[in-house]
Length: 83
Length: 383
Image (cartoon, rainbow over all chains, first blue to last red; front, side):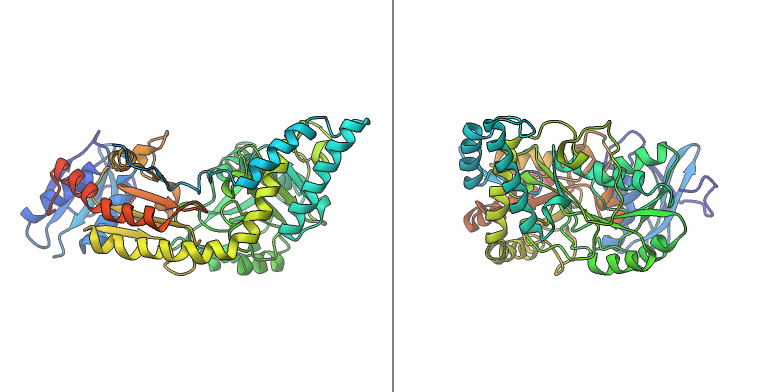
């Protein structure tokens, strides 16, 4: 996970800090249908399982995982709605 | 709630084989003395220990003097890693291991690193198979003292390319340690290794017995304070009744292995194909073909692993999980992590000689409703 700022601006941010998996993945799945295709959703999640489960969810659901970064000291995962 | 219980966690501990129970009772009568002493009771104990060693060596096709009994599979794994690293420290201080080793091996690796050594982790692919190119490059690097590879993943069942990995090690002059805990007594372990460990309660022996094999020509130095038991490889008086029982179970399991594999593999295949067809949003993980015959793992999207484990337990199913919420560290399984597959809602089913088709059918019949109820409770239906 990089400590640099991510290279894109999210259209939406969901804060799942303090939540345990699968809650961050569920939050991403709930939010995604409201976004237009091409929009970027950022999930803030500090459960270590999110680092695996969010990219895995993107693969299963055909969404584009853009990468992980650190935002204000918290792990952040960016997803682009692909479909 | 008066369901018959179906125990599906043989990969943690298989039920005691009936011959192990008989052998242990006999050895408790006959083999309680210290086999190192010089009187008749001790000589009888020594005979039992020697016979057990010879029988285990025959099953593993090694020399008896290469085989030591340890106090657990974990102790054998620790001794394998730390003993070879100590014996070969003049060669170098690098340990190469796969990313999916058992935690016993990874904890030994951490000890090595804390003592100033180096550990290189080699990745696996999406089905949990070792990256052979990365492995070959890693073992050929300067200063490698030992390479460690699990024979088959204890979490997802994928058989590892042990023979190819061993060839890469041989070409680099590096001894290979194989943690064969999930294979011994069930499937053949390919040749080419220098050190092997196994664990009796995985094949139907009692807990508290491990096996460590160090082939002739492989340098091994005890990481423990000096003790001459078990060729200096496992300190303390051996638990002879448990060892005798473990070896009786090993012989029986090895003799039954082909028939059991032929019986259990279709049940595992049935789980692998039925669960994704009857439960929405399930990811079955591990290699579909090159796999252990008795073990299958899958993850249910949006389901809490701990809740699933408890729901299954209430219906009489004992299973294991690699989800973070079920671990004492609250971290997900490092094996699932290395594969890049879903870690939540994870279930591992591992069958054994008492597992029946009826138990598997009952599981397959009840799982869809159990998962649906959990998803309804969590409000995640249709996501």
